[in-house]
Amino acid sequence: MNKKASKAQKNRTFFLSFFKVKKNRDRLIHLGISILAVIIFILAWDLYAQLQNKPYLPRPHMVFDALIASFFNRDPFSQRYMGEHILASMVRILYGFIIAFILAVPLGLLMGWSKHVHNAGNPIVELIRPIPPIAWIPFAIVFFDEPFDTAFIVFLGIFFPVLINTIFGVKRIDPIIIDAAKTLGVTKRNMLQKVIFPAVIPTLMTGIRIGLGIGWMCIVAAEMVGVTGGGVGFYISAMADVGRYDDMFAGMIVIGILGFITVGGASYIERRVSRWMGMR
Amino acid sequence: MDGNALIKIEHLTKIFDSDDKSVSAISNLNLTIEEGEFITLLGPSGCGKTTILRLIAGLEIPSEGIIYERGEKVEGPGPNRGMVFQEFALFPWRTVIKNIEFGLEIQGMPKEKRREIAMHYIDLVNLEGFENAHPNELSGGMKQRVGIARALANEPDVLLMDEPFGSLDAQTRNIMQRELLGIWQKTNKTIVFVTHSVDEALYLSDRVVVLTSRPATIKKEISIDLLRPRDRAGKEFAKLRHEILGEVEEEVTKAIASERKKEES
Image (cartoon, rainbow over all chains, first blue to last red; front, side):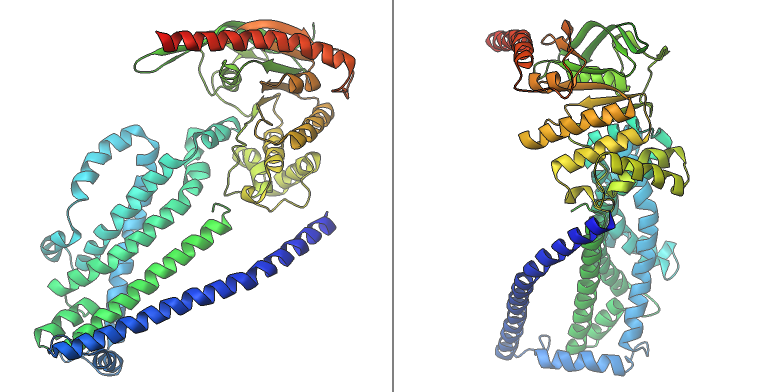
């Protein structure tokens, strides 16, 4: 049996290596195009900023200098390094994310699986969902203490995509798989754990990825309105208030990069998990 | 036939009710399935033969009538009636061996023991070397091997097979049919097989039950006494094929006529 398996393995690696060469070349071309586009974008920005020559539109190299400096100098308002601001924002996102995940996944599984739970939960969900998380900021500031005021805004941003994707994932399960599970002895009690939950994981990960993207938008908005303890959103609005636009843009770029890394990471994990689970 | 009745179907009727119409799928069907028998339900597409299988499995509830398994009324799905689906219905997130272990895992059997049983069935269906592959890495024929092994691992009294080879190519189908007979002989399982292929029914079964077009009821029961392995090109095989084909075609014609009537009205 082992002999057979290792032979099959060998054949597989042979074919894979053949495809890998082509795949790597394709990847390099894709990367090259992307980098070129970014360079053109920065050049266009620089040209436009020079033509405009306005203080609120700094040139790229000024923003770049400000960005580097922000990591090595404390800001004048809260005496923090950029690293500390990033950490503060990430902690808030993490709190919001964890709470959203803990609540949205079980609720989504139940709403997807049970018509009654869906009928009960759906009107409330659909009424709250269209309210922009930012609209909750005044309430959150009064109602919660730091860091849960901002984390609550992030929670709202992440909760709904995860919930909706989980419900969708459950509804998308092929009913024949449920039938098969029943004939194999699965009862109502372990259906959720043994069949529904694993089947839903890839769709759920999509929800997490979308949610994290929205989470970064929410955190900045929440921090800009009012926050103690720093944060990248706070940094942006404070710098704008005193007219240090190069620093403001530096903060914006930090958010962009952090969001890119988070969503990119989530998307990478999503693909890896789906492949590892044999589901894509 | 005077063996032990494993499954007894009495006055089975199934009507599907939807909002605007009700469809009668099965009408007053009576059938006894003997222990160890390989029985095939043969009928035109959409005649309700899959519904009969789903009713035996407990996945549907009869509108009227009763199904008994070993004298006990069937009231829902259970591991003593294993099912094999045309669409395979494997759990895509589970590897081959974990698909096969599934039923045992549900029962709470310890890992070592269920691994051992699963390996036995992997052997039986010729899947050695693919234990850790996921279903999406397998061909249709191999997927159905997993489906069969998964159902067998629970050691059910009966294997309900719903057009299990319907989505396979002709060559694979022939191989799978041959292997299924081998598995049946080794395990002494009772098999209830659903197909619309006369050839398949003839090659496999002890008894072929020809069903009428919807609503399904028994048109004719034919015992196949040919020795196995059967020669598909043989004279007797051809004679029986001719006979059964006649019965089935009659029903197909009826079904088409009634469809046409419905369209006209």
